[in-house]
Amino acid sequence: MAGVGIGVASLIIVLSVMNGFNLKIRQNMLNVEPHLVIMGVPPSKEYEIRKAIGDGIESLWYSENQDVVLRTADGVFSGAIAKGLPTQGIRDWLKHVWKPRNAAASTIDINKIELGPRQAVIGVDLASNLGVFDGDDLYVIPPETLLMPKGEVPKYEKVTIKGIISTQMQDIDGKMFIYNSGNTLKGWWKNAASLENGFELRLNNPYDADTIAKQLRARGFKTQSWHERNTALFFALKMESLAMTIFLSLAVLITSFSIVSVMVLLITQKRKEMGMLMAMGFSKKSTRKAFTLVGIYLSAIGVGAGLIFGCGVALFMDYFPIEVLPDIYYDSTLPAHLSGNIVLGTIVGAAILAWAGAYIPVRLYVDPMPADCLRRR
Image 1 (tube, rainbow, N blue to C red):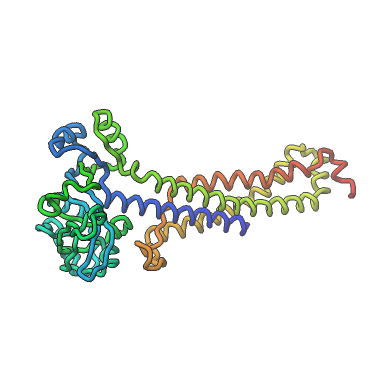
Image 2: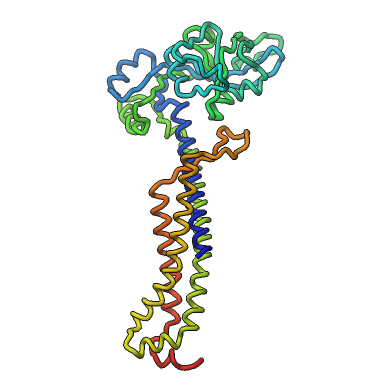
């Protein structure tokens, strides 16, 4: 019973923690990424896009994305992704990703943030790699100019850091360089080889993104939803969860063999009693049922105790996150989310194993004739 209980509790706790991690990653992704990207269209298509989607749009802006090389005054280099947004687009984006690093940052009014000419916001990890702080200057260089012949000076633009953000997403904190597309990186930057532009949308319901993307593709737009851009990540998370479920289920299966051993020993010791019951009128089916219920009761007590303990721990971790992870992770808490599917799946799987562990030995070892049971062996 203890073995079955520990196996069931472990299965519920681990699956709840993995479910919590998946939801945390998904929520962070929905905060920092646009729900829908429409690529390779001019700004004049905004009205047509709004008309096609209707009331489902929370916010929409025209963006520029390109690869750049950043250089500090001390000669430290790092690659980055430069993202150009209009003023309102920057504010809308920061509303979802802004996580103040100190008390002073928490008092900043997002609606009043405005990036002037040659000003930018960068991710906290990128700033750490470059060794820069608010107010420092960076030199922004297009990567293709590094291939120019020796002796020619590469093109660059000097930009001042207006802010450093933390989003708990590696692609943002370690690579992102945000600027105002209306007054920074203009002119010859428009011809950069890596430049990609188009509309970025946030939807009232982000889970409608795939459906809306199909509708826009039917109208001739080249578009991707947030789920399509991160298919590899979601597939990896799904496979990881499936692998953990299989291995932990094997632990429960192993403990079910102890129920088989108990039932075999019980049947061996109670062989005469079984013969007496059948001699008094018990049918073979009734005798098997009586001993099968003994095994099921043993398993049910273990499963029930494991369910209560596992669900209790998972709910506690859900409402009171435990900070146990080191600083190298973006979130130091250990998230957990207990869902009905996890509980139901665990109950059904444990019930099947409990029944099999009790019924199979009874089926194999209960003799069909009372005389066979009563005969000494």
